[in-house]
Image 1 (cartoon, helix red, strand yellow):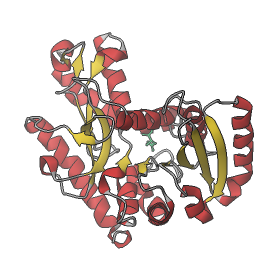
Image 2 (cartoon, rainbow, N blue to C red):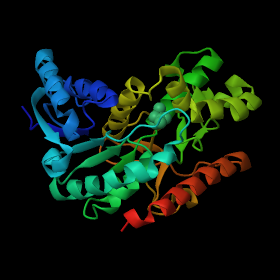
Image 3 (tube, protein in one colour):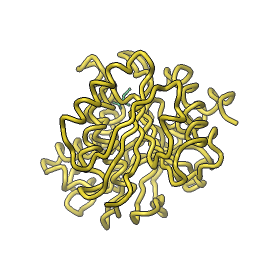
Image 4 (cartoon, protein in one colour):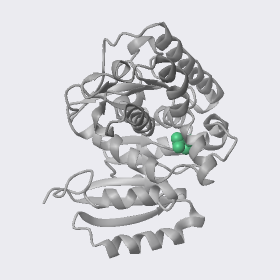
Length: 329
Ligand code: LMR
């Protein structure tokens, strides 16, 4: 049997963490023959609930789960020790009426410690996915506090937006969601993101030619995707949980599995300057993976409409970066 992959999940007893941990333990992501060890991290007042999570893990008798370590967030280095993956879910979620950026000064400081602990304790091949909002800028903060962890290991989650976008396009076209491919999410996981329908395909044809309704695509589809998180909060009275957990799994799968031809997956990563984006900003792009490394899809052409949308989300990320400049080193 191969060595277990160690996965840390912060906020592991919260709604997203709870949905996520069991699916990782089940072998769904790393495969039925790959053992997994989970490091479940929570803030001290929630540690008791984590005992219950561990009990349920035992009660699932997953053949792939070799063990669970419970850790409190006052001892993050223990929480991240030797971890190959750190899934940063824990943070204060937004409530109705808030934008994700309103959380920036609340959640930002958590990610200073997260970055330091990842650098100090995680495995040499660690990869990090930040989910807690505002996830792009939280990821930027953590990355800046872990200068020895290569920059291509850091991701913030825009996969939930991609999944939302695919479902909306499928519904509009009257097709199954699996027919929709190549929907890249550009920029911030926020109401400024740009879900790129121009490069999307439906059963291999351009989505714009199948849907034949540019007005809907430009003035309805984009805002629906941009504001879906808020709509879920409004309807559920709490922010998305099962769909967010599902998107974390899809992000990890996107990174570790080769991307099918003609497809992409979405995540925000440390920009190398591609498409004129500031180097070092955590920016959402359409990506491909060969199963080992992830690349930004190059050479996509954007018309003036798309360029203006990308500029808006870039400006927002620049301003988030300015807001936390004291937390960046
Ligand atoms: C989401 O998109 O559902 C999450 O980022 C939660 C939120 O605040 O919208």
